[in-house]
Amino acid sequence: MTVTDEYLANNATYASTFTGPLPLPPAKHIAVVACMDARLNVYGALGIQEGESHVIRNAGGVITPGEIRSLAISQRLLGTTEIVLIHHTDCGMLTFTDDAFKASIQEETGIKPEWAAESFTDLETDVRQSIARIIASPYIPHKDNIRGFIFDVATGKLNEVKVA
Amino acid sequence: MTVTDEYLANNATYASTFTGPLPLPPAKHIAVVACMDARLNVYGALGIQEGESHVIRNAGGVITPGEIRSLAISQRLLGTTEIVLIHHTDCGMLTFTDDAFKASIQEETGIKPEWAAESFTDLETDVRQSIARIIASPYIPHKDNIRGFIFDVATGKLNEVKVA
Image 1 (tube, each protein chain N blue to C red):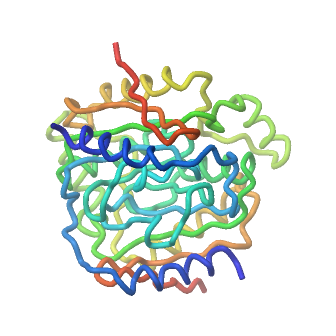
Image 2 (cartoon, chains in turn red, orange):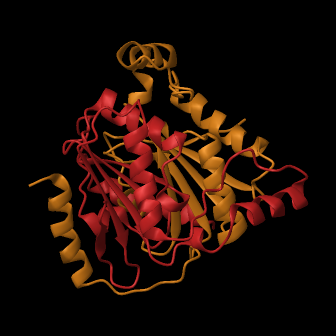
Image 3 (cartoon, rainbow over the protein chains, first blue to last red):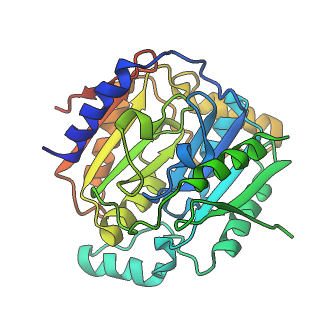
């Protein structure tokens, strides 16, 4: 049995008490952008209920053109106006460099990724960088409520990153 | 009070019973790629516990270079080998075309997005397209366990997409 099969069994339990459907636009008009890390349960950590918030996640919780795409769709087509960014302690993105990671892929496959790996060396600096990229984007209309946090994987607490 | 403040209050409750830290690599060696939709609570719907699975999400749950980046980091640096893709019924991506969305942004801001919006017209076809993009990527080493599903926002059930 694969993990996928195990999750499908869990889904049958979930569906047995499911009450839907809810409306398509997020009821709380908010989008969360977080790292894909396995220890960061965004629903639990923020107390998000079904139907409330868009949740966008990738390696690092960084803002790349792909996240600008998702945020543009979120704000322009589905009415969100507030953004929360979440990085976390002990992040895998702190453990390598773009150059080394891409060189290792090139060595193994013969092809160097055409994308940036977006590794970083300081959590707070990268949260600020992510906010700066949203502010700089011409495609995101609502920028008055953007806040960034670092989730502590030891305590479960969100600590806010002060933006100058 | 913003929604962010409300979620921070929820976080204090979450942290009060939090037991960590867990190891960095996902314990179940799996990565889930899902739509950002507010009604799709990936943790609830699949019964995922903290520490088990990477969760990657964007508008549509589509595979773009950004998701290849996250999956490459997930598999190559953090040991995952299994991938689950989740689209869902009543998806916002079915409600517009790339051309119209980008033209509206160009009209409002004067700048046309340099990225594809990745709208689609058929859920099952797009799940298969996403799987095909992973299969075609030279950067993803583990492709033997990739399965795609459509989450039904009315029933909470995951329905598997058959791949030819």
